[in-house]
Structure formats: structure tokens, C-alpha cells
Amino acid sequence: METTTDQNRQHNLTGIMMMCAGVAFLCINDGLAKSLMDHYSPIQIIFLRNVIALPFAILLALKMGGRRALRSHRVGVHFLRGLIWITATVLFFTSIHLMGLAEATAIAFVAPLFITAISALFIARVGWRRWIAVVIGFVGVLVIVRPGAATFELVSLLPVATAFTYALLMLSARFVDTRESMWTLLLYLSATSAILTGSIVTFFWTPIRAEDIWLFIAIAMFGTAGMTMITQAFRVAEAPTVAPFDYTALIWATGLGWFFWGETPDALTFVGAAIITLSGIFIIFRERKVASDE
Image (tube, rainbow, N blue to C red; front, side, top):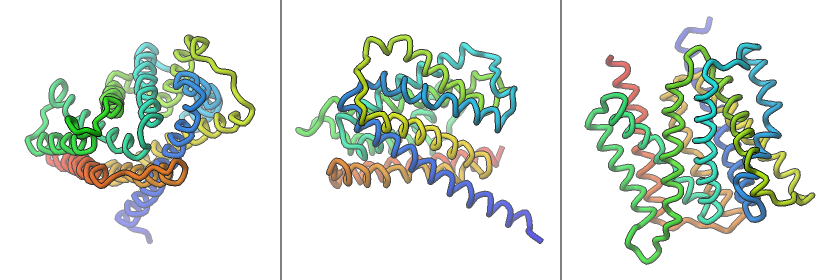
């Protein structure tokens, strides 16, 4: 007979596998966006991605949450989150277009540090250990960006801005009605993004080349699949167990950048990425310990 411990272990293993798969799908999504950025604006890419993905998001919400998953009690909050999400995506797509995929991804991983810092200032008390981890994590950003060095470029600050905006998106979930499921959040994030970008996309529109149609379909599919897998990972396993595997994105981003664009991050970028990763993982486990002690 399977014990509770065995069941938890199996759930955690399943969650880890889902997390790794979801992260891989999102990295492919980023790689597709990078290739499309040569011909299309971020607004047009976001619009088409969400329009194509929306029917699948609706079907997924219905299957996982039933008809009530289609209903929101605070639509205005979802539109605000959609605006923040568009801002973060535009910033990130622009950064991976102008920078190496691995370098931009590594810097953007300071988002959990921003979440901790903003929470400490406005939401809840954060202990000194996590504050030290936040500071060390930002040192990792400085190692990659190297302000004051001859190689420094202002574009390096784009993924930092992405991380800050993404942190605001995560924290804004606190204002969503507690009766709404994760599937409702995902559905409305896609729907509001499609509506908001659709209202201005004509100003950024470029005729779509026939050979790029499959890329737009692929970016919608991989983006939706990635978010779904990650969401499911957090549903079936403990968050502190699966969260650190989000950093496997650095492996995928490095591999994709090297294979398709010949990008090879320098040694300091790897050092900075390691510092950011270790700081983020420490915060994850520290928050778990604090929560268990309360």
C-alpha cells in the first residue's frame, strides 16, 4: 500500500517534471519571439499570440474550472494586470532582440528579489537573511551589466525593468477576488492582453509574411502550454520544491541562443547568473521555513 510519503514524493516528482517542461516551452516561446522581432513589433506579436491562444485558454478554463472559471468578480483588476503583463512582455521581447537570450533571461531572474523587496516595503516584514539575499542577488545583476565598464550599454537595464514589472504583476494577484481560480487568472490575462494590444495594434501593424504564420501559431501554442504546465506543477507539488526548477530556463536560453544565433555568454555573465540563481533559491527556501515556523 502506498504511503502518504510515497504519494508526496510522486507528486513532487510529477510537479518537477511539469515545471521543467513548462520552462522549456516558455524558453522556446522567447526564442520564437526573438526571431519574429526582426520583422514585427512586440505589440503585434503579443496581440497575435493572445488572439490565437484565447480559444484554447477558454477551453482549458472550462475543462479545469467549469463555467464559473469564465466569470470574474473584479474585471478592472484583470485589465490592470493585462496592462502590466503587456509592459513586461514588451520590455523583455525588446531586450532579447537587442541582447543575448541567456544574458537577458539571467538578469530578468531578479524578479523574485524585487517581489521580496517590494513586499518588505509595503506588504509584510522580511527578515535580514532575505534582505541580504536580495542585495547579493542585485550584485549578480551588476556583475552581468557591469555599469561603468567600457562594455556597458543602457539596453542592459531593459531586463531589469522587465523583472520589476513582472514582480508588480505577481504582487497584483493579491487584488484578484479570492473566489477566482488560477485558470480564471490565466484566461483573463490572455483576454485582456488581446483586447488592450488590439486597441493599438494598427499603429504597429506590419503585413504578415506567409512563412511566418507558423511561427505565430507556434508561439501561441508554446506560450499557452508553458503557462499551463507551470500552473499545474504548482497545483500537484509543493511550491518550494518546484520553484527552484524555474532556473532551468538559463540552460535552455543559453542553448537556444548558442544554437540559433551563435551567442556565447562570457564568464562574468555565468558568474552573475549563478549569484542571482543562488540568491533566488535561498529566498524560496527561507520563505518556506518562515512560513512553517508561523
